[in-house]
Length: 219
Image 1 (tube, one colour):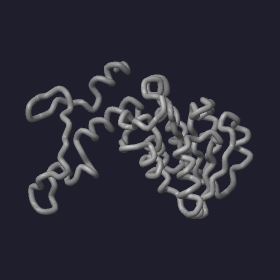
Image 2 (cartoon, one colour):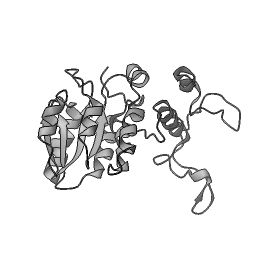
Image 3 (cartoon, one colour):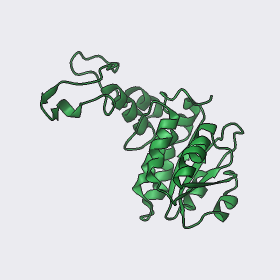
Image 4 (cartoon, helix red, strand yellow):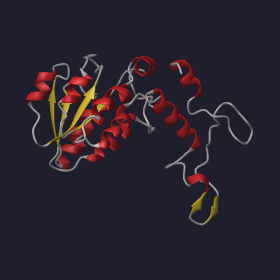
């Protein structure tokens, strides 16, 4: 199907009880269980699972040619979740024009925890390659960058990953991002061809993918 058709229908099946063609907004915080410890269709608390959020996640994953999507209430929340793959002693390689909120997570939270971050111009793949060490576990890419709008060669930087996890990020507005750059499709072709790349790279989509719920992103 064409992108426009997928955008209208993916993750938006009619509501089974009434047949409503628009996904209802489920505002509940809890759900009735069929019996103790047996939630109906897996729904227990909205903080962990919610039908409205599931529809959003499914639609965005399918539009990106992915298999899973994760929606967060803010970009920083998603970023921190993705960074949980790291441990003290690990190293991040990031662009030197990284979004300010991400930079503060790197410097004020992760560095005191023992995770080092090195910064280089992401538009210069060669400079990135020069500083990769055995401790490098994550390559953090934002393209176009905020605020200087530098462009990174995602495929070239992914090829540098080897045994590291390659994570990427966007800070641009949704329409151009999602219709012109199928990030998951392009990068996963590379990752799946390399058996030594961790499957945890799928989390990078959640890290800073342009979710429409993320109003903190700059236009």
